[in-house]
Image (tube, rainbow, N blue to C red; front, side):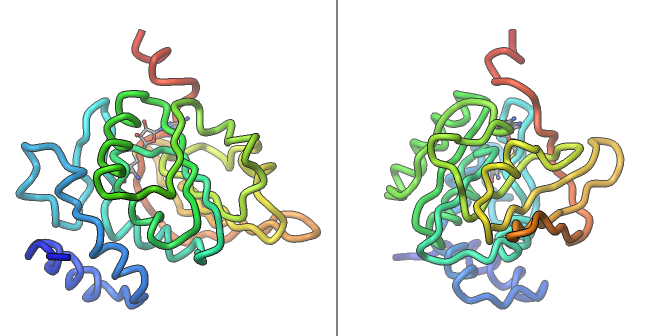
Length: 215
Ligand code: SAH
């Protein structure tokens, strides 16, 4: 596979920021970020920054994707629930590191575009639905791993319910104006244990589906 020069720049940038997980860096290298970025922002596709993708949403910043995925402690046999597909960039990275990604996006048009990109990249271990990700995916629960890409004020209880025993959920928690923190939740036999993994900035987790919100 040929790797775009920008992609190499991004990998070097992430390495200089202390990322040393080779499997994760290799997954980042295999996902051409320019495919997930609108035409107007192409020249910034390999910068370590979030970029607009329409509907008031953004494709996540690569170093944030990396921090969240590192915290998730993935393995090749695990299935992952992702809430907030957005452009599908993080979905594509995840798909290289786990068995299957179940991804939920409230804006149906964003999901459709993401699915087209994932198909083109032959990421066949991804299943997506349009809907409210705060409700999880009951038919596929429990999940050993859950990753949330939009900030809620607290850990959505339904998602906590759908986390398998021994499972890990990583989610940005906090309000849109105040500070948000990456929270890691581990579900043990006796309950939930949470850790604060530092500050972050995400778009908010919204209720309902995009269709309702746009009326
Ligand atoms: N990680 C994504 C970016 C996600 S931006 C990427 O790499 O492109 C956050 C996404 O969460 C947005 O697309 C937004 O529409 C979606 N979102 C917000 N609230 C949601 C909800 N309740 N259910 C599902 N998706 C939601």
